[in-house]
Image 1 (cartoon, one colour):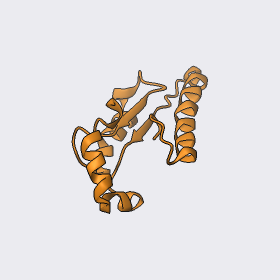
Image 2 (cartoon, rainbow, N blue to C red):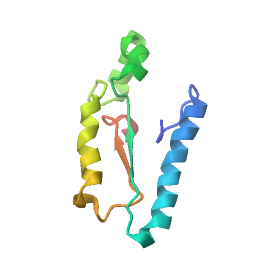
Image 3 (cartoon, one colour):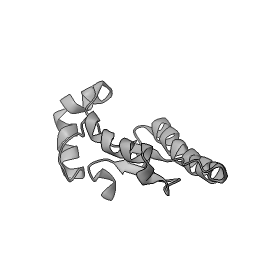
Image 4 (spheres, rainbow, N blue to C red):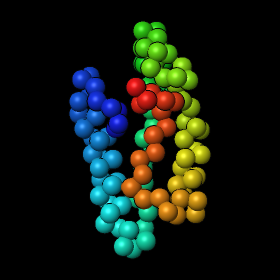
Length: 107
């Protein structure tokens, strides 16, 4: 929801988009101190927060259509991007919005 709008969760979308813009603004401001600011935007991750969606057959069918990998992501699938951003491999990255959503935002 940080990258795409929905009329179901307007407040949630606004908050997520705000985080993305705050990331970019902080990246601009803190680059002079050689501080990187990036964020990870997870898609549908199988957690307690998404339990209702996971259990809803209609929602799962919708996601099968929208997500090329046809499944919810697993929390551990966010580890790789987090390790990248925490490592020296990302020293020249700042203001990046790293989307980990199984391809949902391709549409």
